[in-house]
Image (cartoon, rainbow, N blue to C red; front, side, top):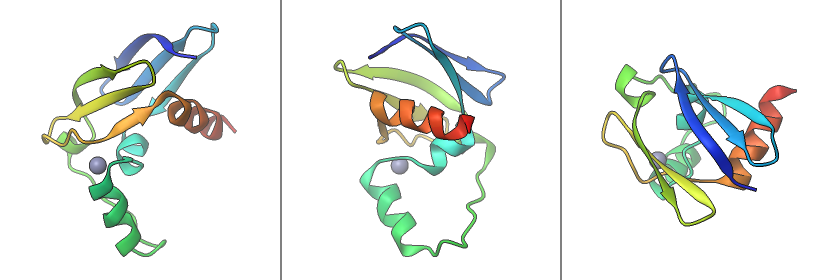
Length: 100
Ligand SMILES: [Zn+2]
């Protein structure tokens, strides 16, 4: 499964239209919070579960999105952070979780 169309809405949501006809919107703040890159993973491991990250505006807005092969997108945030590669399966699971 892969996205047919990816759109940023109101600088707040990432809307993805999948090739099976389903669409989902993902909150950008949540996406940044779950950034799968090694740096952010290590950062999150250091912090306790009670920690609530506060983000600056430029950390939760997107500068550009690149497609990585046939399995993922790389999000470049406005603060320059661009090491997070979001696999389609990750995005799909994430969207399903948020819906509930
Ligand atoms: Zn990261």
